[in-house]
Length: 121
Image (cartoon, rainbow, N blue to C red; front, side, top):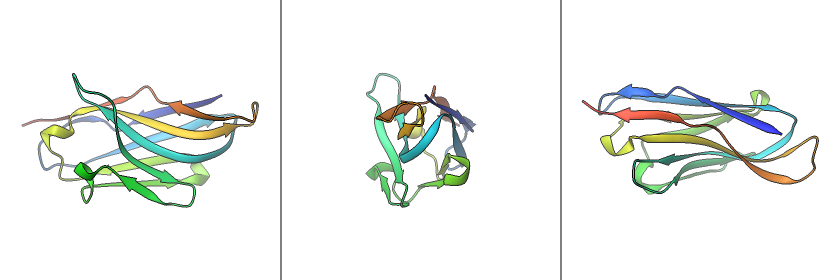
């Protein structure tokens, strides 16, 4: 199985920046798509950004131009650079990966435990 561990969350003032990291470990054969989702209190989980193995990126409109997703395939790590943060960005951010483990040749979706991002003055 593949494990995802997020880091980099915290408290930041509006207009500030944070960089989230997600490191994948375990029996990894390939990670085709990695991304970030977020869930604010009382709201459904939503896609924030994704990046493919070919470095194609997709962003939700509300973060486009402010957030940047990137990956280091050699380290099995995905990053989310978050600039110009707004209070509405406050949420638990979850790392997500779609890939194949070496032990079981089935395409699966994996989730991290989440990291809290709070934007407040």
